[in-house]
Image 1 (cartoon, rainbow, N blue to C red):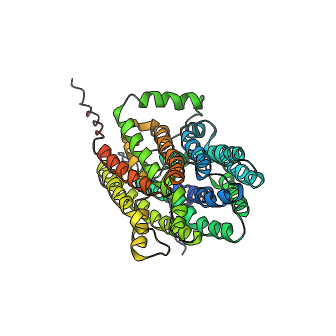
Image 2 (cartoon, rainbow, N blue to C red):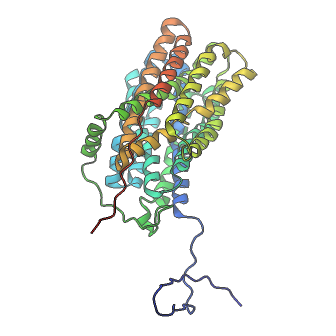
Amino acid sequence: MVAHWMLYDVTQTSEAAAIVADTPPARRSRIHRAWFVAAVTFVTIIGAAAFRSLPGLLIDPLHQEFGWSRGTVGAAVSVNLALYGLTAPFAAALMDRFGIRRVVAVALTVIAVGSGLTVWMTAAWQLMLCWGLLVGLGSGSMALAFAATVTNRWFTARKGLVTGILTAASASGQLIFLPLLSWIVEKHDWRPAAVTVALAALAVVPFVWLLLRDHPADVGQKPYGSAEFVPKPEPVPGAARRAVTVLLSAVRTGPFWLLAGTFAICGASTNGLVQTHFVPAAHDHGMPITAAASLLAVIGVFDVVGTVASGWFTDRFEPRRLLAVYYALRGVSLLFLPMLLAPAVHPPMIFFIVFYGLDWVATVPPTLALCREQYGDDSAIVFGWVLASHQVGAALVAFLGGVARDAFGSYDVVWYASGALCAAAALMALVIRRRPAPMPTLPAMA
C-alpha cells in the first residue's frame, strides 16, 4: 500500500467534516523558498566582494609603477567607498521600482566594466573614473541595502539571523579572493588581478537573472514566518524622490544621527582603515604582502562567525547594548595594534586578527534592527542612508590614512585616532532612545 500525503481543511460547523481521500494534492516543500533566495543572495554578494579585496593590494604597486602618492591612490579608493554608500539608498528605492534582479544584474555588469578598464589606465584621473566612479556606483547597488531588501521582503521571522548571514557573505568573498588576488599581484602584476575581479562579477550575473526572485508572491508563497499571504506591491515610481523624501523625514529624528554617526565610525575603522591600509602598514614593518593579505583573509573567516552570531544575539538581546560592546572592544584592540606589527606573524598578532574579525561587521545586524524599530517600512532606505554615512567615514579615513602615512612616515596616529572614535561610538549607541510601543486598542463599548 502506498501512503499518500493529503492536504485538507477542517471546517467546524454543525455538519460532519467531509473526508477528502480520492486525489492526493502535491506534497509541500519542507524548505521554504525564502532560504533558496537567501542562498542566491549570499552567492551573489560573495561574487561581488572580489572588488573589495583589491584596493589595499593596489596601493604599493600603483605607487611603484606610476609614482602616484599613497594619498592619490587613497583618494580614488575614497571616491569608491563614498559612492558605495551614497548609491545604496537610491539602489534600495530602485529595487522597489524595477525589481531586485534587474538592479543587481546591471550593478554587477558596471563593476566588471569599471574593473576591466583599469588595465589600460595611465593617469590618476582614469583610476578615479574606473575604480572610483564606475566600481563605486556598481558596488553601491550591491551594498547591504540589497541584503536588507531581500530580508524585509522574504522573511518575517529570523530577520536578525538572515541579516547576519548575508552580511557575512561579503567577508566570505574577501576570504575567497584576497589570498588569490595577493598571489596574482605579487607573482604576475596588478592587471591580471583587476581582470579576475571583472570576471568574478560577470560570472554571478546568470545566477542572479535565473534564480533570484523579487518577492514571495512571485512564486505564490508567504514570507518565511508569516501567517498570511502578502501580495506583491505595485512598483513604486519616483525612486530618487522617495529616497530623498525618506531622508528628509529621517533627519528630523535624533536616532538617525546617532545611527549614522556610529556607522560612520564603523566604516572608518574597518573599510577605510584596516581593509585599505593594513597591508601597506604591515609591509612598512617588513611583513610580506602575501602574509599581510592572508591575515586579512583570516579576518574574513572570523567575520563570518562573528556576524552570524551577532544576528543570533540581535534576535534575543537589546541591540543598543550590543552595539556599545562591539564598538568598545574594537576601540581597545586598535590601540594595541601599533605594538603588534612586525616582520613576521606572531601569536599576539593572530589574537588581534581573530578578535577584530569577530567584531568586523557584527555591528550590522543590531544597526539594521534599530532602523526597523525606528522607521518601519522605510527601514531599508533609511539603512541605505545610514550605510552612506558608513562609507563616507570609510572614504575619509582611506584618504586621510594615506595622507598621514605620507606626512608622518607611519600609520600609528591613525590607529590611535580610530580607537578613540570607537570609544565615542560606544557611548553614542547607548543613548539611542527606544521607540515607544504602540498603545493597545481598547475594545469598543456599547
